[in-house]
Amino acid sequence: MTEPTASRVNFVDLDRVSLRYGEDADGTLALQGTTLGVQSGEFVAVVGPSGCGKSTLMKVVTGLWPPTAGTVLVSGREVSGPLSIVGMAFQNPTLLPWRTTLDNVMLPLEIVQPHCSRLRRERAAYEAKARDLLTLVGLKGFEDRFPWQLSGGMQQRASLCRALIHDPSLLMLDEPFASLDMFTREELWLALQELWLARHPTVILVTHDLREAVFLADRVLVMSSRPGRIIAEREVDVPRPRTLDVTYEPYSVALVHELREQISVARTSVN
Amino acid sequence: MTVSEAVSHPPAKRRKPLMRRKTQRRVLPWVVTILLFIVWELTVRVFDIEPFLLPSPSAIFASGWQWRWPILDNAWQTFMTTTVGFFIAVVIGLLAGIAVGSSTLVYDGFYPALIGFNTIPKVAVIPILVIWFGVGTVPAIITAFLLSFFPILVNVATGIATVEPELRDVLRALGATRWQVIKKVGLPRSMPYFFASLKVAITVAFVGSIVAETVASNKGIGNLMLVASSRFEVPLAFAGLLVTSVMGIGMYLVAEIVERRMTGWATRGSDGALGIPG
Image (tube, rainbow over all chains, first blue to last red; front, side, top):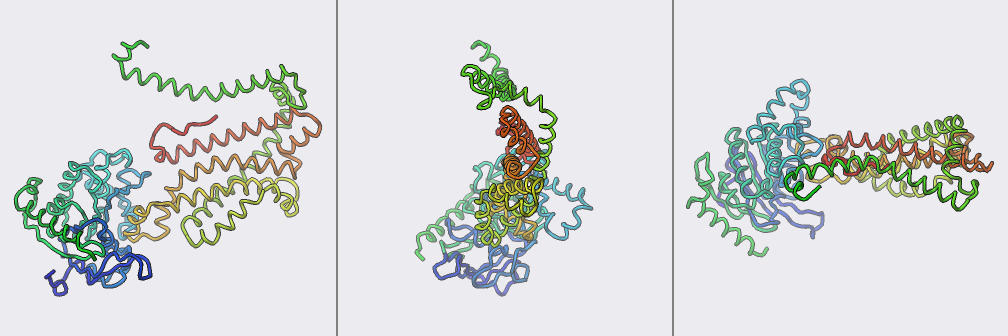
């Protein structure tokens, strides 16, 4: 990687971050000397072979796991615990089955300040906001259904809304579309693009779908197999809004192909 | 229904057995119970069994009617001690369950002691309770409590301890405190376990209070049965058993209805797949 991360002010900055699960030396080394920077409002996708520590990267950035070595800066401050400016969505929608879709989406508001103390007084306004978000992802009319009454794709849409309800400046997506069929996945790419264009949060998307990475991201980072490091980086120079057809145009296809090659290298290289 | 009918009206074909099944489920417990009594009655009459060995249902009902006021009086005592003990068990079981389920420290420290405690036969404790509190209502309440709080504790603790890590991460990533995670995820998630345990707890609470009444009380169904059998009034003793069963079923149903109301999401609206065993 040629980019001198230190000289630029990034929204997310990882400097030689390592993480070892378990305390002794024979614990699993998930990340080793990972350095990366994400600018404010940028959409970055991280791709890599399975088990390369992509999800660990998410945990380190959000402060769920402290790194073993190195520093993690978000918005100029070192991360020492969970950050409320982060919205997260996982591979499983992880909606709470005893709450309606609307109540699920509003869950972060019950925890994150300043919304938490305002929620009771301004409930109507917050509810309207949640409904707007749900409408934006095409879930209008399903607000009062329970998650188990929705399809997998719909649940994932609701999960995205939940990640965005408290206006996070950083959106962390951990393979959010991995368990969906391809058509639903593509629909959700469009929904996510729309959400991003409307609000411009900084996004880090972890995925193993290269087409997804190329369609959604400004920049794609390739991780090596465990212990994970960033071994390559490609800008995606396609104007937005992008259409699904773009992913079949030569530029995108070549990019996907190139990334595919990088991952093959990453897989075969023995660490 | 003929074949042609079934083919031309497939929805009707599906709906009819479903409705029939519903009424079936409502009626079946009564049918089985009545059949049981009939078989019992016939067995007693055909083999000419002595009433002090096994009284016939008719003799039991007759005796029950004859002694209805003392039975009601004693049943009320049993019902009261059982429910008081049960409600104490609900409160303490719920609180202890939250503590044990949400903290590995509490879990590691207390669980062996709790298991050891639960292994003690509660009948053996009753004489000690009598020394402490005297004969009567208090030992019965405490025995009902001792028997019924453990299943509640274990179930609530299990519900909270087995929250999916991802579900917890969703909240933790937002900066939720431990207590917020328990309140928003752990507790609601453990509610199906909690209500399931209530059904077990209420029935064992009856066992506790009646055993205590038999050993150390001068009131209650347990005492009534003890007195009745010592006088060879075996039909009366059996009437006491019947009344106890009816109370048990009644409380079980109450627990079941509350469960359905509170945790319909857990059964996914499958129209009570668990059913009510009469």
